[in-house]
Image (tube, rainbow, N blue to C red):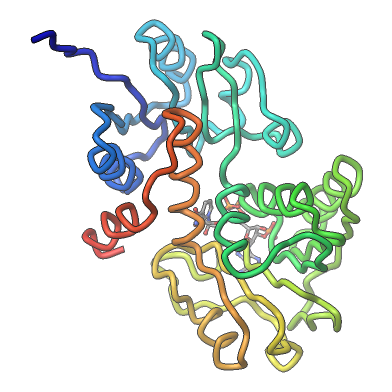
Length: 282
Ligand code: NDP
């Protein structure tokens, strides 16, 4: 019998890295689908990133995720970018294609995939709370998925205006900025409201974005990027008003599914990945 002891390698470069649960989720999918692949969670300091990427090349890694603080810095070490990664200006997934390392961004793609289980973004009017890295990725992917208009609502005007301009100038959607002053009134005709801020992130899990909840309508879809706990107080209030909701756990799982599709070319089982996270109490 001929054995193959050479496992295809994937993983993650980030700092800090210890609390990142992606390794559990992706490892469970590899095992379930009978892939003798490895996902290695690596703590990589900013000054070591170039060597880490060179090492991945030397060892023939199939690809890797990049998390904070490497999402922008990694670009200069790659051979090319996918369309949305180029527009977003950040990479969180690197894929080896024909020997070249290509940067992709699955933050927004994972969000859109989770949202699609509830609503098709095509032609929809969207209010996007936040203008950080996650909001930028979500806004660009919603636009590329066909959303008609995206209103970026952000506390600091500079970041908000920048994300609105990227959407408006580099995608087919209309992008506009609105300042976030007091409790934001959701405009009539909004189809989808998204919290892509860090409000509600552990340990501040009771915090809720300041919006006028009375301006929500039951036919609006409300989404939150916060993965843990996934039923945020923001989503609870929206559900109480009759809105359908999409959570940040779905976004995280779909990012893993997209990464595995890029690397291994298979559609991984979402339930297995969700269970791996649930077993960790997530
Ligand atoms: P950033 O730090 O880049 O951006 C944070 C955003 O939140 C900014 O727009 C900031 O506004 C806004 N914000 C923070 N606090 C407040 C506040 N009190 N009032 C109003 N606005 C506020 O973070 P990221 O974009 O990288 O991440 C945002 C969230 O997305 C994180 O919580 C992360 O968990 C989540 N995320 C989830 C993923 C998933 O798979 N589920 C994947 C990636 C991210 P300002 O510009 O004014 O400072």
